[in-house]
Image (tube, rainbow, N blue to C red):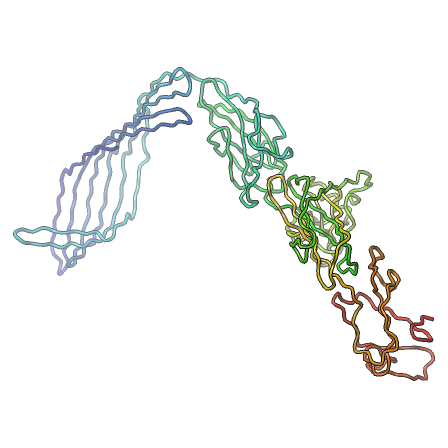
Amino acid sequence: DRKSVSRQFFHYSVTFPIGPVWLTFFIGSRGGYSTSLGWEACFLSMEGKTRITPWAGLVVYGGARVTIFIFAVELSIHGHIVDTSFPTQLSLNFAKMPLKVGGRMDLVLIPLTVEIWAAVKIEIRICIWGCFTITKTIWTSRLWSYRAPAITRNIFTIGNYDHDFSPPTFSHLSSLDYDFDQERRSVSDEACRVGQVGGMFPKEPKFLLETAAADDESNVKFSYSVGTYFGGNNVKNGVEMGGPKIVSSDSLPSGIPLYFTVSARNTEGLTSESQCSIPTFDTTLPSGRVEQSFDVSANPFHLSAFFVAHDDSKLLDAGRVAVGLGVGSSNVVPWHDFEYTSISKNDDAKDDLQRFASPRLGLLSTKPVGMKMVLGPQYCASFCLSFASHCVSFDYDYDTRECRVQKTIEGPDAELRVLRSFHNFERIGVGHSKWLEYRNLSLEHGKVYAINTRIENVLGYSQRISSKGTLIDFTPPDTAPILNVKYNITTADGCSASIKQKSCNEITPWPNHRIVVDGEGSLAVFNGHVPFEDKLYTRYNNFVSANFRGFYDEAGIFAYTWAVGRTPLARN
């Protein structure tokens, strides 16, 4: 609340015409005094305050006004002289016994404040049984100002305060209010504990920071700092907590260890510190891939794939898997649980490169966590291992010798792309894997079947990972038109159908080898080297040639083989 009184001491003006323009000069002085009263109560700090502020000041001013018809332009200078106030505060702290009562009065004196103002006004003078003027300001602005430094002095301070010569003392925390993953709890003393809160969106993460400290004589205020090294503050510095426990959504870097320093400060300014840390602040979904055994299969009963996953946070012990027509579907095998195992480390590795799997052509599409030019993949492996748990894979270019350290593996958010001579090396012993196999199915020709998985970590972040799909193909490749067929049969030759078969594992029991002997007028295979012309006779006895229109298959043509014999189908 504020009570004020103002008074105009004097105001003189003189006006005279200059053609159609009226010019006015004015000068004046006014002053005033006021008293403001306020109060506040802080329940967390258990403190109440009352403030009374008497104020007094004097203003002198002068200026000129130019009036044309009803419009007036005014320029004025204002000087505030000896602006004086006496802030007085009474406080009562009832946080500890005995109650602490205090009061103080200060003097705040501003010797001089000068301001230059400009204004545009509309003035209408009306005379009916007397004259009066209606004034409306349509624009005003402060063009310049100067304020002398304030003079502040304490007049008196009274109270029953006792000096506190000891800093706050940290105590042991009892139990967790949140069920944190053990890997994400404090790794130092239990006077400070930090963990990431589960159930949040990856792009809106939160962390819980809690501590326990007290002071017998004073109130305690808490703040925290965050760094990428023990005791550091290069991420956050001196953030007020408002209490011993907070849940914060402050932005923090992910993928690296973070070290928290909690400071407890009493009213005397004495400070104690406690440290804790988390291995990483997770803002990404789990990553991984499902590699199907075959892109194309002729087996109507069997599907299999290799599952591998990785995440900054600990994965749940079990995931979900299903088989269906296309990515994400479950219309062949419904969703059910499956347990994966941690990938075993290669403890017998003789060098750092042996701690990584065999290279695959390409590099990951994600942003690397580290880059360096090295002389070979073995040095790139050593550079990657220097990132500790955040070394999950690395990309190496054999031409430019560029090494890129990755904190993820190939998956939905990290695509393997071919670029120059880059090769990707995945670290052995990081992540989880599972061999997925399904038998006694009833697969249909011409359809694509995918193995779909769904995994989740302890923070509730879930990811759906699927194989690219396996095309089921029961039919041999189609040929150009065949006329006057002499021989056409499809046999179940198993693994001996072709010398170019990629695998003999899980071969189809159904007929898979079509043998055709065409007749005259056929448009598939032609004798001789003249395109699409069938040569039945030749004088050459030192070479044999043939040409064909080509073959078609929905799965594509993998390879062509040929042989020469003295009779049809012979290879002699």
